[in-house]
Length: 425
Image 1 (tube, rainbow, N blue to C red):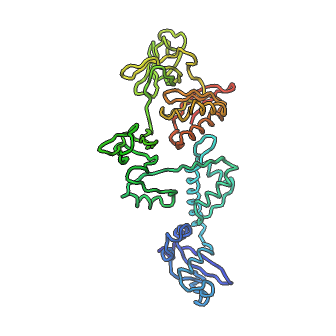
Image 2: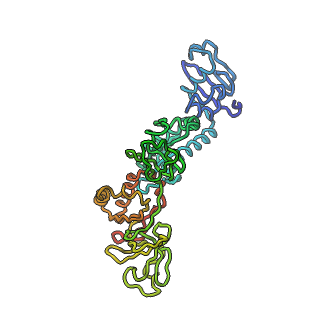
Image 3: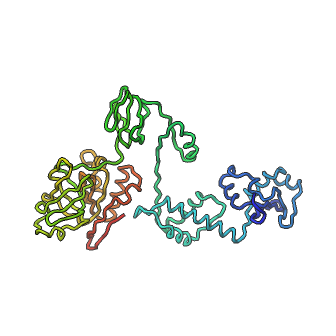
């Protein structure tokens, strides 16, 4: 129960009479959001209804019965809170408005992005925009409703885009109660899985997970049969195709093969060769004799320096998986513009599509040059709008959250219509 010094007046004027109660302003805010979360007796400083609290005057029982239909203090107080107004002091209102404003800014900053950069807006930018539109903040109105109102007014001032992500969880039966209680307001669908055969779905599994009875099923990639049960050997998504149960890994590393087209980054050099990082367990080497054009001994770094991106081809692979690459061939070159995107090699099929149809359509619609390498890297070159369009399409095709792509773009310093442009994320 709040002390009298910290309590504020809640007032309702009806039928020419005034009714007041002394309440905790912070608990009133919680009560207005969810009136079952706070008991009326907890937010009242004194369980009394006043006609003038400062003078200590109380209304008659007949007046309460006539106005509220009852003399019950809890019901009268609820009606005053719902239909009346809260009489905050200037200092109290300022503090509560500032705190509510901070919560609104944090909510917008954490859920909205700039559609051009795909990055969150800085909190200072959102705060300045709210001041510019003179957004009125109600200290007792819920955050969700005020965020919705603020976004409508902010869109003409700053571009806002909201990304909604649907997540699926698999929990053990013993943890269902706690998990359901934690997520009860956000659950869209729940399903109990049977103990094995036909409800596996596309769930995330980890090594050692029991996938059910093996009878009638074949163990595919990443799955092992042990004592009549299917066991997961990898972390990834469980796939069921016909009678085959397999696991699509979440992440994979590139293993070089002779003839592969690859995009690499120079990590070092000597007098007569370069060391190329391909995303493989070991760096590849690019001898001077297989480099771009004629290179004088000791002049490797003047031709291609550390950090440069190159499009090359794997020429040979040793038993240790270390490899030799070459830049002697049609189209092989140093990459001087655009961006290099990196995805896991096992997902390349989704980008290319059947017979290359998806990739061809993406090139035509975005007006970008797109080179897909076998080591999971893509060279994307074109106008900035086109490059960002390609990135959005990749997000959609791979069905991955934006955060998984943050930092996976390599900037390439290049030229676009005579201007030097640095693309980054």
